Image (tube, rainbow, N blue to C red):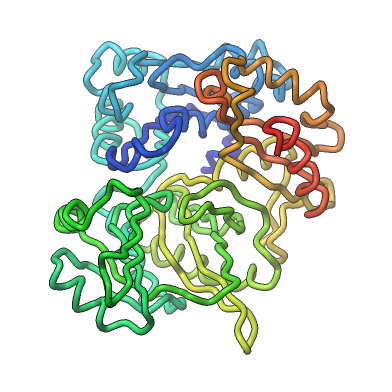
Length: 448
């Protein structure tokens, strides 16, 4: 079973941001991230596939039309797409709102058959409850295995897999435990992370001898009082702060099928603004690509034995040493992450396949590269419609070339009218082509 290339059946896509809402509110246009999985509309190119897509607010028809423009039979695809909205953007997360609406649950039930799968953005008790209500299996990890997606769980599974990691301690809940761990590590600064932090939020850089200088990723309004309360509730880790520069931030994307088969499907270099994810480039640099993939393979193998199912990501630090490049496991994210939709969009628009030997995507005998962003924003885009921006990109010759299978695939289009923000994945036949076209597109849309 591959959600990227299903041959038949119904994908019930639940892009609910079932995450700690206090951190989520700090992300601009966070609700629009429900659109990250709209690339799965491209699976409708397979004539026996249907898609049920849930959302907090209606998906703009111009956005649907944009994704349909990639499909060979748009009318037939439209008959196999069911967009179901609760039309309540302020009630979050989405899955909780769906469960509170028996009419919505019944509508979902009425359009799925016996071959449906629930595809969640992230797993929580809410997604398990919805799957049980619909009597469908989940393409995602059971909540009984959620610990392995925490910061402490990642350290445990990384240790068992024998992959390199920064020195540190996990399963910490009290300030006394935190203080002991801080003093036990080398260096002048350490990292303290909440177990369930995401997108760089929930982290703190702590000067060992002057905690008043702590830098909280959540912003200036965070304090040790509030952070300690979150630690007591959720737990966390303390790790050495990697001072080495330059420091790179590769990641790996893996999948485990319901039958237990596991494989690494991509490696990326992440683009960060401080600790916050902004985008990625594919593939990861050749200097450490193989090491990242090898570590990810070991971790995926162990998680498959534990019974994990679905897509998940692993983040690393990479640095140059006297012996070459080293890659250290940073965390395991048992959910669909920021690199998933660029990878899926590229796979579905170029008909590429991943070559684990080289770590490249191959299409028509040649490799494909891409550069993606989640955060192209400009005041001049506010108030414009998704269709207007699509026409702008196409008019400048920056859209997707269906012959060469290069160009831009847009996403997060629903954030344009209110926030002047969108994302796009730029596909090229070389690293240089993808980077150059990406820069040209960013300048055209955002002025820099």
